[in-house]
Amino acid sequence: MCNTLLALGILALLASLSSPSLAQAAPTASAKTSVDTPALGPLQLENGYPTAATARKLYDTLDLQRATQGYL
Image 1 (spheres, rainbow, N blue to C red):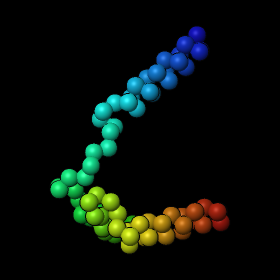
Image 2: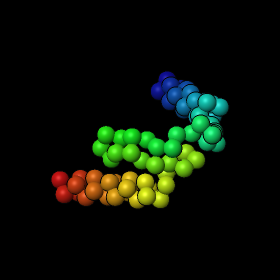
Image 3: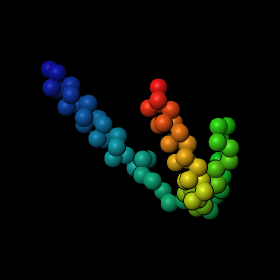
Image 4: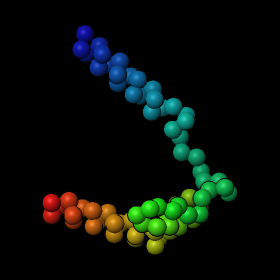
């Protein structure tokens, strides 16, 4: 019984992952050029991807969060 439920759950997960709605579409002309966040301020995008400065800001923030968690 448990194996059957597990198999059905796995099949449902695989079916949802193969859904066309999850496929990533290429950025369009209407793609955002910036995202305004409360904690980090505006993050700049080019063609839907973060700029080098935005990526650096995100990695610096991630490093700070990891260091804080490591300290705690």
